[in-house]
Length: 323
Ligand code: GLV
Ligand code: GLV
Image (spheres, rainbow, N blue to C red):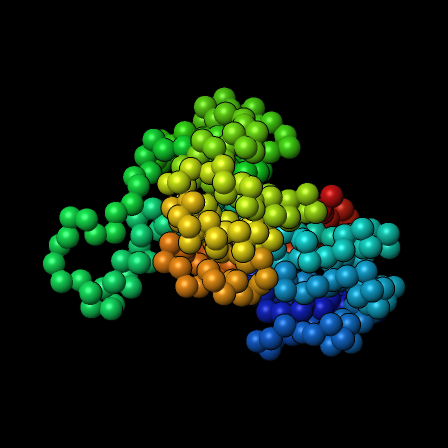
């Protein structure tokens, strides 16, 4: 029997590899080097594969899909976001695209909360202050920031991750939840006393704003100059979704002019580099796109990737196909 070839563009958690290698009918090949494969090399190595596992650093355009040959049945993205893949081009060739939703929801929601706390309580500035040996004695006015309890959290995008953050914020901190989305979420309204709001109303009334929408043409620069003008002066903006949703030049200006209090960002408009001006500011906390980086999430993401591939290569429906 001819083996089905699975190509993995870069190392994923062992668990997924193990699940795939248990099938004698599969031949698993992986780029185990610590680098992203350039386009041509990816095509070369993945050519005529039946399944391709991608990371969000792999840009899978229509012409890449075309060049991979006619055996390809599934592109399994090791991520929840899939803006790196031309899903329509895949669909046109009957190739299923899958992502890893649900399994990383809690990890990302916890990270968004962590950034909120870091910004409010100025954890990173405090750390630097100690390292720089500036801490001489207790100071009553040192590194003050807002308390979180009872403040209003505006959540843009109330899908799985946005809802998980709402739970943490409501149950853990007694925050008032406002949300904006293209759809109403009645369960959140009922169970967390959350209120639906227009984007402008949310920005105008929130002390914390956290973004949880996918990157789409309609969400690019959703937050820019106009939006920063509306936000509260004490507001903290958190982005763990995709960088281009925020206009980073506008963010730099807003932070510099103190139009908002601070920002915590895990994703960048021009990955992997924040715009230069942001790096000079104290009222911003960066993390290097690690919102889903828990041991639990990575293992479950790899498991989800493997389950999708096993299903599709056995002519069964994928577990988590993207729409
Ligand atoms: C990470 O950004 C993901 O989309 O999984
Ligand atoms: C992603 O998993 C979301 O729905 O927020």
